[in-house]
Length: 188
Image (cartoon, rainbow, N blue to C red; front, side, top):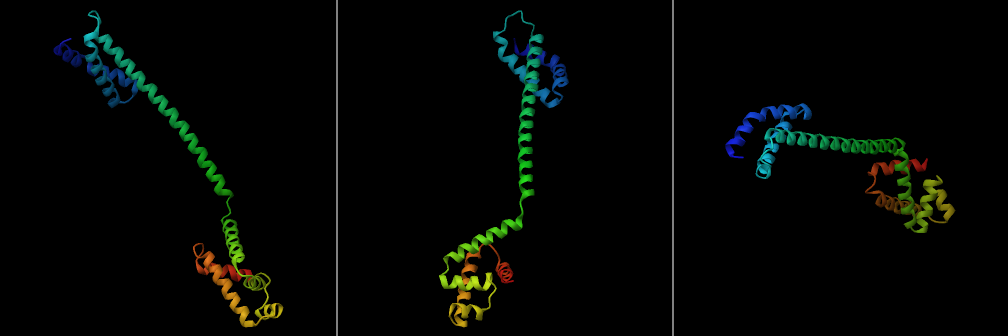
């Protein structure tokens, strides 16, 4: 096939082949790409084709096969997208169920309790006893002093140590005013 014959074939059939391809792929730009690619394939194969091959029919077969391949690829892509969408839907639904059952107050309260318990475990025994008697049992400083046989001033000092340890344990977790509110709540 000469360049002149190829040019004539292109001029005569290009628009018709785009129209045919577009009927199936439903996208003019895709149809134009398929036809252009089909002409390139024909040009490359022209030297190895038998002399009696009707080039128009051969070209139409290439366009048909390329359009079919595009549609199969599109179908596979849509199926995979659907499966991915279905997986994403399941993940979103699981997230919704998980978040719906989450009680933030309970989560934060248990975390604060864990941090307070950890801080209390590291306190010296006397400091822990004073704090526990004051905040958990609701005893006054004088009652604690009498019970433990220490001065009122020592009770005050031990409470300062306990509160300092708790502030340190909770410094990254809660603002100071929340700590005070929580500790005041324990007193009641």
